[in-house]
Every structure is written in C-alpha cells, then in structure tokens.
Length: 464
Image 1 (cartoon, rainbow, N blue to C red):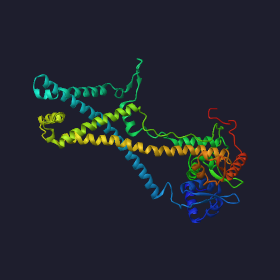
Image 2: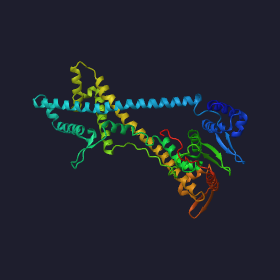
Image 3: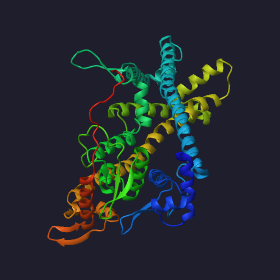
Image 4: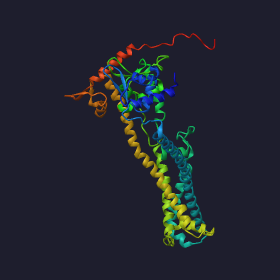
C-alpha cells in the first residue's frame, strides 16, 4: 500500500485526467488505489482545489472541480499569497513597533520639551522684570504675563498630577489606590486599538464544531454548520471540507440523497454536553478600551504639540514678523539660546520644533481616524454573521414558518442553498423551506442509524 503522500499525488493526477465529476469508486477504478484510502484522501483534494459536491439519483457523491486545479496551499499563486500575507504581517508589526516607540518619544517628549521651554522663558522673563531690567517689556507684558503664567501652571499641573499619567487611579473616598493601566498602553489603545476582539476564533469555532458533532452522533449538515459559524452557504461549504481534512471527516450521501458530513474518528470518546444552535456570537470591535476622558486628554496633549509646532514653524518662516512682536517671545528666547551656542540659522527651530511635531500630530490623529472609519464595516460584517446564525438556526428549527422578521436578506441568501416557497398573508411574507425540511428529516434518519462505538472498560493500563 502506497504512503498517503504518494497516493495523494496519484489521486490528484487521476482527478485532473478525469475531466468530469467522479465518485470514489471511479477514482479507485482509474488509479487502482485502495477504496478506503481514496475515501480518506478525497476530502483533502476537495478542500485544496475547492471542489463542488454533487449527489446522483442513486445516492452517490460525485466530486467536481469547476475552478480547476489551482491549489489553495501549493503552487506559485499560493506561495505568493502566503508570502504577501507574511510580508504584510511582518511589515505591519514592524511599523506598529516603530510608531509605538516614536509616539511615546514624541507625545511625551515634545510635550515635556515645550512645557520646559515655556517655563524657562517665563523664568527669565520674571527674573528680568524683578531686577528692573527691560522695564518697557515688563509694562507691555504685565497683563499678558499673568495669563501666560496661569496657562503654563495649568499645563504643569496636568502633566504631573493627572491620573492619566500616574499609572494609578485613586478613589475620592480615600481608600487604597487601585492599579491602573500604564500610560504607554493607554496611548497605544488610543492610536492602534486593542487588537482583534475575536482573536483565536478559528480555534473556538473548531471546539464548538467538535462539541456539536460529538453530541449529534458524529454527523452534521451544511445548514447546521451555517447556524454554528455564521458563514454564508458557499463559505460554509468550503469550511466544512477543510474541517473534514482536519478532523478526519468525510461527506456522505443519505438514503434520501442529501449530503451529510460524518466524523467517526472524533466521535469515539465520552459524550459531549451542549452542542446547541445557534453558535456563539462574535464580539464587536471597539475604538479603544480607554475612558473617554483619557482619550480626550491625549487629544489635548496632541493639540498642545500641534499649537507649539505651528507657532515655531510660522516664526521660523517669517523671521521678520518676530521682530518687535510680543507673541514671538518664546521663539526669540529659543533662538537666543541657540545663537549663544553658535547656531545662527532658523532652520533647526523650524525643523525640530515646527515640522517634526506638526507631522507627528497629524499622524497621531490620522491613524485613529482611519482605524475608526474601518470599524463600522468590520462591525457590520460581524453583526451580519451573528444575525445569520440566529436566522439559520430559527429556519432549521422550523423550516416551514420563516418570516421576514428573521432577516429577509439572510432568508434570500439561504435560498441559494434551498429554494423556499413564498406566500403572503396579513402578517407579510412567509417562506416555506420544504426541501430543507426533507433534508432535516433525512438527517435525523441518518443519525438514528449511526452506531456509536463506546470506549468500554479498561483492559490494559501502563500503571498496572
């Protein structure tokens, strides 16, 4: 007997040469492979090459390959697709790490730098005023200096005392402090979100599927899987074939000519509890797990950086306007410090304190804005999947009493799998899935005939 890999290559070669729908017996006759090995390998080929299943009048399952033999897993196209996915994932991770480091350096660093520049300028202004020097400037800035000092004092207090930056939150009742979320995590949550709320969904769905199969005598139908997974009929068909490969299942034909999916290998063991329809719902994406006050604080800090960046860039580009202007005091103060250090150009101020923070502030708002714009479409898809589960489960429970309230769009979608009869009464449109009822009855009859093997008593133990 050939190994499975060698037999699989020969089976695929036979399927390509056939050029028409074939049964397991046809493949065996054309390849001389053992029938049981062919039955075990056909689901793998059906999954890899996106086969379509057909049931003949005699109740035999035929495999057809309307999309040809372009592999989903091997070949140049599949390799290129995997490469692009891996490269995209790696690039996304690298950019995310870069932005996270850059964000902390820019948001916190520049905010602190601007506050320190303002405090230093205020200190020298007050010192000059108190020593009697530059009395004219002291008189001109007397009213504005008080407001400017109050603004800086408010920013200073916000920076050092706001619970946004403290990493801890305190109850006003005076009880012990509660551990809070660190600042960098709050910032990343605002900019990048908190990741996929349904991470690991494939594994979760696999466990739900296995539990359902084991609690229903090792057999499942496509409509039941739609109600478990929330996938549309075409996607669910492909996913079930993939599940056959993963869990040792195979499509079978009932005596009534309907397709069922049988998983004898995972049926052996203790009986599963649960396994009800519909399946678990997916969680919606959230913009951020932060409190709205925290996100507002980050927006305020970014606005401060944006304002200072625009201020320094403006006067760096319009140096003549700075001469004799009271509001240019911060710019002239920074320039005097650099001039004393031997830097006579305005370029460092315009670039370092203008362009860089402006560019950062733009990206700091752009990334969350773009991400937020995509959340709506993601949540619409999730809501549709969740609705599809409930609709499919309700129709499967009572195929003859489907109403538009279940979701007319999803009823029509399920009609591509099983065509309903439509009638209209005083309550509106009513849909009767008579073929689906026939399939449900056939499935129940098929399950009743399945002989479930039990584990029985232990006859050997390595501990004995």
